[in-house]
View 1 (cartoon, rainbow, N blue to C red):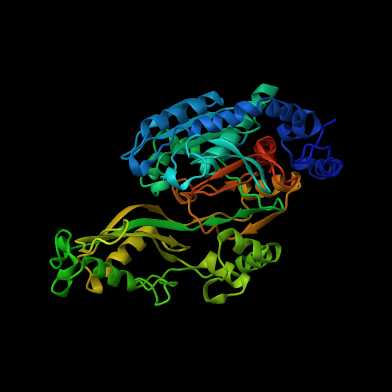
View 2 (view 1 turned 180 degrees about the horizontal axis):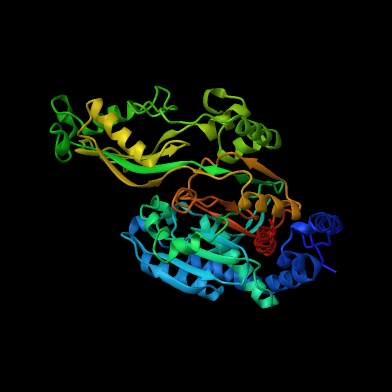
Length: 513
């Protein structure tokens, strides 16, 4: 008899009953591989293997964190690709290759399990920059610390974004191999090293002559994630916003006014300021409150929310805790003091112009009394359907020129279009079936406000469903003290062994849909 356990490791009779009902009601829909999974002790054997490999799986994450590949700094990019390739080979992928691009390389591999169905897996092996002085635990040491209300967690750059979840998916393949079971789907793995700089060359990788034919066989592709909330809840995203990353630069040299380099601030009475020039340009990009883009033509192609999307957002709002959401973000008000549901509608539907950082002149201790010759603003622009990256870049440049800021440089560094995946697609239905089988509350979310290069998959020439999947918890992406829970103290939230089993379940459910 198959043994089911809850996330605390206790026998779960309700899960056993639920599974029996699912098997009885859905046997006609199951592939032979999924039926075998339900009818034998496969779950028990694979879970036992995952438990036995737990320490090795944790160490795999720690070792990976110790090698940071940071595209923005050109740090360890060759080594990162080589390490990713070896991780793939160790997990059973064959034909693993490092694929060059005009930027940093990607990694590609396949796993032919003789199945009728193919599932794609997207990885990123790069991470964001970090300042060790801001961390309470060294960002590359991947120490295990106690996280109140969550349990024991690995702290390190890339812990949850995305090395922890990705290594946990690899752990599912190791566990299945150790237990003597082949995955019920063929797998295609594509990994890039430039996601954190906007994936500027990812399309080259995905459409490579060896990679694209393999991807086109996939019925869907997902990026591993670990986003369980405190009540164990998850969201299934039907899309993600697109993004454009860039910097605006105002300089005396380009402007023809102001100094070419820093000069004494006493000269401000007679010399123009490039820093103020940049501020004036920035003010034209948004409404006076800074909350709505004012770039000429920006909303021309923006698609409003559909009735179904509004319905789904209402369900998300009803199932969420607004106070906890605010607390997790460290905020006390939404824009315009909107009610929670309307704030969530705005989150899903509105494009944004965000200032990531402003740099100009002296920012150290005390004053330096200079008039800087150059100032830089780091921006990201979030896009919604039916905007495109190309349109956004073109309209921003035209707006600045029209408003008299032709001297302000626009240095675009990366980005991609928004992503949309149909609610009735095989991928989304498999995710929902998996969460149901695991007894996890899942809600459909029309659009993730964050971004990933899923549009490369969902748009021609590939045109395959793309999304996120995974259980477990982590937080702090792009921030100090980023973490990934490995031993959960919350019975509703998965630790690394249960998260490993979540990916196993997903493969079988995908084969069955």
